[in-house]
Length: 266
Image (cartoon, rainbow, N blue to C red; front, side):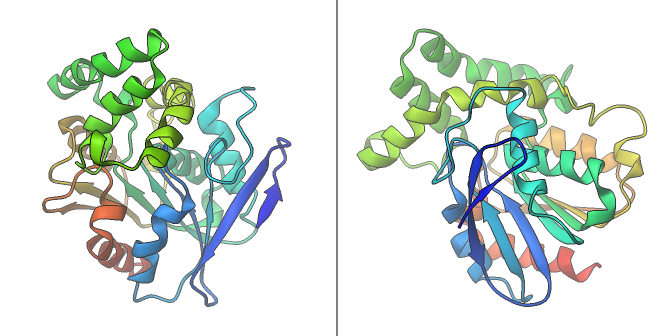
């Protein structure tokens, strides 16, 4: 289903599950809404989910480059919310979900954040310095206009662990075509231009929150999760053993089990 959002962009929405309880889901960068399929299939809780293709991803229209990219992602998802929903986000989608929760908390029944990449939360830490070093080869390739190489270097850190030459050519091209959207999200992720970390903002959230991370994710993710969790009123912090950053895909059943736990807390 395609939907026009207030900003004027066409956003594709994929539905999973059924029931009276509604959810909205935002995937990670360089993916698409289909990445949620295994996780939502493994849920025990009946949940009618609308999963958007983020701007520039999947079947949604290309991002028009106007304004802030993460805010555009949040606006696309928020346009679907006209009653309280369970809000689920992964990676950059989790940061957009946090923006929505802060903007319209009365419309968020529960909030599930899977590996939120709010890098600003880790600034000043050894984990952040390590992240900057890890990302340097990606940044060099991107700045040189080598999009395919940039996608390869990015995926080495944030992918499933599958070697680049074993990923099908169509998927490699899909990621290379969208690699510019990584830097487009950085004002929100690395600089916190929305002010998520401002004094009192995270503390104001009263809905049940679950933060889910993989034990094999980059160290900066654990630091981010720790900083965010310390400031939330009602939060669970869970690890998925052996999982890297793409755990909704690689460890769908385990992530679904943790989502079920958070849904049961409301």
